[in-house]
Each structure stands twice: as C-alpha cells, then as structure tokens.
Length: 426
Ligand code: PLP
Image 1 (cartoon, rainbow, N blue to C red):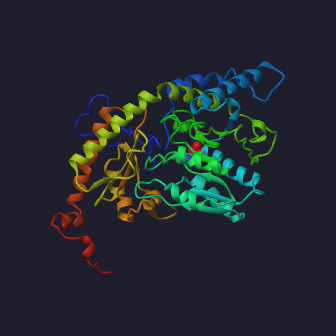
Image 2: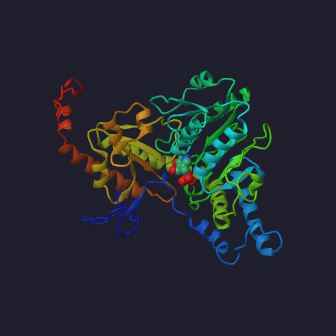
Image 3: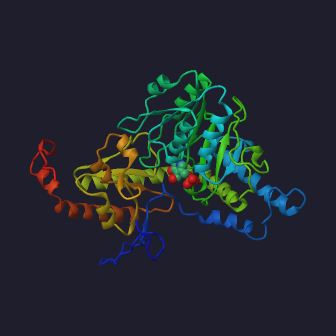
C-alpha cells in the first residue's frame, strides 16, 4: 500500500453518498499490524518524557529512583496480566527482540544438553528467521506442519521430540489467521519431557486469557504496540521456578535486566506498556465479547451477500478480533484498491519485486490465487458497528463489481469445471 499525503498509507477518496453517522475515513481495521495508542496510555507516559526523565539505573538521586519506581510498577502490571511475577519480566525493544533473545539465548545456554528445536511453519518471521540463523550455527530445527484449519497436531510434536530437544517454540495465536494453538497441552507435554517451552504470544496477550502457570509456558514474548501501547517496547517473560530458565544475553553492556538484556531502559515506553497491560486486564473480558460479536456480524454479512467466499483458519480456537477471508475469483490487490479508504491487509506480501502469496495461507493448503484473494480484517478496541457496516457494504459492492469483470467467475457461474480446462501456455 502506498504512503500518501495523510500519512496513514491509505488513500482517501471523496465519497459521493454521505457517510453514515460515526464513520470517519479512513477506517483502520488492521489491528494485528499495530494498534493505536490508547489515550489513557499516552497520559500515563507523558510525565516520563518531561519532568520524570531520569535513568532507571541511576542509583544515587531521586530522578533515577522515580524512573526505577515507574519501571517496577510496569513490571507488576505486565506480570499480573499473564500470571507471572514482576521479577520474571525482562524489558526489550519489542517482540522481534524478545523472540530473538528467547531462541538464541536458550539455544546458547542449553547447547550442552542438546541442539534440537521444534517450531511450526506458520510462526512469525521473527521466530522463523531466528531459527534459520540457528540452523546455520549447527542447530537442528523441526518445522511442524499445520492442518487446513491452521492448528498443529500434538502427535506430530510428540513424534518430533527426541533426547536432544531443548526447546519448543509455538506461537499462542497467529497474526494472519487468528488461530489459537493448543498451548496448554503443548506446555504440559514439554514439561513432562523436561523441554523448555517458548510462546510468541504477541497477538494473544491482552486479547484472550494468557496464564503462564496454567499454560505451562517457560518463556513468552509480548509487544506494546499490539495492545494499544507504544511501539518499540516489549517484554520477555522468563520463568524463575519449576524450572528456573536461564538465558544467555544477546546484548552486552552494563548488565541491566538481571544480566539478560543490557541497555538503558526506555522508561516512557515501559510505563506505557504497563498502563496498556493494566487496561487490557480490566477490560479484556467485555472487549473480547464485543469484538467477537462484531467479527461474527461482519463474517455473516459477507457470507450472506457473496458466494465463493470462505473463512481461513479454525473459528473455534480463534482470536476475537480476527477474520481472514478469501474472496475467490477476485484479485486481492484490486479488492484492496477498491476499498482504499479502509485499512486492512491482503494475503500477499511484497518481497523484492514480486507479490508473494502469504506463506501462512499456503501452509493451510490454499493455492496462490486463493491466497492472493484473501483479506485479513483486524478489529480492535476503537472499531464500531457503524464502521463494520460500512466496510462490509463496501467489500460486497467491490467484489460484485470485480466479479462482473472476471471471466473465471463467469465460467464457474455457467457451470464450467475450471479444473478440467487445459490452458494454453504462452
Ligand atoms: N510476533 C508476532 C506474532 C507478531 O504479530 C509481531 C508483529 O507483527 C511480532 C512478533 C513482532 O513484534 P514487534 O513489532 O514488537 O517487533
């Protein structure tokens, strides 16, 4: 999507018909990519940019003490959201760093015990690319497949584990298809086998209940900007008891964060992350219900009005605000252009020169065409029913128009079996 003058990356077109009440363009419905900062979070952060600007590591004056107090409060707030203790929270620059620290830090620390890591094919690149790097360093990585519903099979995990397996890393919820993995069962298996269990819980924390004790998680990554907090700040939960997890630091210099992550703490960011976590804890239950209703409303509206649409990913084990849908016989980028006053994501990713179909959708068994025709809707705290109505109507309208121009759609409507056609090569 190109960046235009309004700085949102969304091109706003003049609307011929008046907008429904409460709808302002552009509409943001891409809350898995990032979330807007909650005004209450900004308010909590403000003093730490100005008056309370101390370095949390300054031990001999009140500026430092105040800053440290604020970061300790944030540690508590985050710990409470995931059932941890404050001492188990390590601050980082975001979940990419948390994932790197978890995987590389454990791989290095437990190298004597083994060199095998298990993950899955639909992980975020922050895990997959880290695994690729570890493979180059001599580690063995098993990438578990997922079923057509996006879930891993526990039996595959059990078969893959051997006496050299030191770590299992499976994400809590997927950022594209919103599928929630059987985390508790995975954790129980890992604990039974004495294997450490890391989960990239960026999309789940603050949206659905996450409890590191009940879920048997040893190490967990989370990020501020996915929970209405600031960008550039995140955390890694590192279990201290049963078992006590040790992580080899990846950034050296001063021994901050119990030696696991050096660097002056981003105090305003950390305060924001803490405030965001507390708001999620207080409002999560009601908000999850609201978003689920909105999501189902959107899904039903689209399914009722359009044929050849289908939902990607298991809908029973699913994030409240996620809906990933394929609009077959429509090209995703054309669809996105047709709804250019709405910010959503397509099932394509721009690599250097080409538009690649999403590797997550491909892992579910979708063909390139169907993957390209997919849209990820990410509903969030600030989306309203009026916005959902606007977006649904617009999609319905654009899909119908695009299909009028689609020879494939016409042929299917005429009852021609496309799989039996021999296309001429050119
Ligand atoms: N993991 C998942 C599942 C994500 O969705 C993201 C963000 O896109 C990340 C990791 C990376 O997080 P951050 O942007 O904080 O580095």
